[in-house]
Every structure is written in C-alpha cells, then in structure tokens.
Image (cartoon, rainbow, N blue to C red; front, top):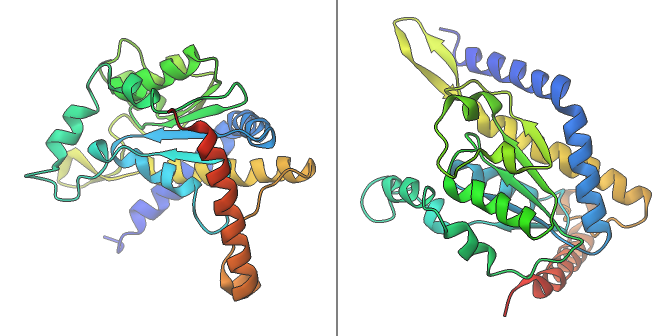
Length: 256
C-alpha cells in the first residue's frame, strides 16, 4: 500500500495515453467548437450520470467563456441520495429510456452554426445515443467523448453506440470496467474509476485550444476570471460580460 499513489500513477499514465493518442481528435473537436462559437453559435454539451461533470466543467467556471451550453437533466444526474426518492436506480432507468432524447432536444432551437458535444464513458445509454443521433439529423456536427473499450464491451441500448453517431470521436482510453486499480486479494472488482479524470482533461484541453483558435481570429468572448488574477472590479466586469453574452445566445436557442 502506497497511500493512494497507485491510482495517481495509473491516472498519470491514462492522461499520457490520452495526450499521445487523442491529440488529433481533440484538435478537430476544437476547430468545430471555434467555428461554432466564432460564428455566434453554441456548442451544446450533454451527458448523463457522472458524465455531467465534464459538461459542468466547460461553463461556467473560472477560465471559461460563453459559447459552451451545458444541458444537464436533473432526472439523470441528481442522484446524491443514492436510494429512495431521486435515487440512482431511477436515474439509471431514465437514461435508458428510448424517445426521451427527442423530448429534450425539442426544447431548443438549434442553429446551422451550432455544434454538439456528448460525454458518456460507456456511450451505450439510449438517451445519449439518441441525443447525438437527433443532433446529426438536425445537421449539426457531433463530438463524442467516450471510452471505446467500455463501449465495445457493453450491450447497445439505443440501436447503436455513441461513437457510431459522431463526426469526431475522442477516446477516454479507460479500460472496459473503467476502474484503474486491481488490488491484491480482490481480483474480480477493480477500484478507482478513471473516466471522469480523462473526460475533464479532454474538456479543458478543448476549452484551451478553442480559446487559442478564437483569439487568433479576435473572436474570443469574455473569459470568467478570478479576483485573484485581475482584482474585484475587473473580475465583476468579466463575469457580467460573460453572463450577458451567454444569455444572449441562450435566448436564441430556446424553443418557444
């Protein structure tokens, strides 16, 4: 036992693999995002279960900017009580429900300049698969952030896998069971999932590269910035400017 360092070492190796094998896909995804945001559109972000975490990482956060639109359905993500009302069983059932994605998509007025990014470690749930399919049917480019090993190891629920419904696929590089560490005396059940670490890393890599591409075209929206960096007045100005810009884009995207 090395006080948790086994998982940290495995996590470092995972991030190195993502860096070494997925840089091309991350670049293509960033180009799609920069094109959408630079044109005044949205990159709509979606994920269920724990895959809401990278969605929320994209915006709003310090070091983030308008143009990324998080879509988080509480029925499939708010399960901190685990059992009982609003529990994990219900959330897992709901994310396998055919037809729900189309109901979610119907709440938005998508523009031709928009794009979609869907996060799902397994890429197998009916809702995430149908969300990506519905976005493509509307003519939008779709970026999938998923684990190819996990996806291939599981059973399809939406008639396809998320990666089959995407224009760009970014592999989280996590193993079929997600967890990274096998403990001596516990050969059957690995411990310590890696998909959240990889997904958040991918999200921020795309965020930074997209910012570089937008900055080169003088189209980078205001960046939400900490008081520690720019002082209270400037921080407040940037917050308000970012929120106003997000609200302006969001107002156009809501179906009425």
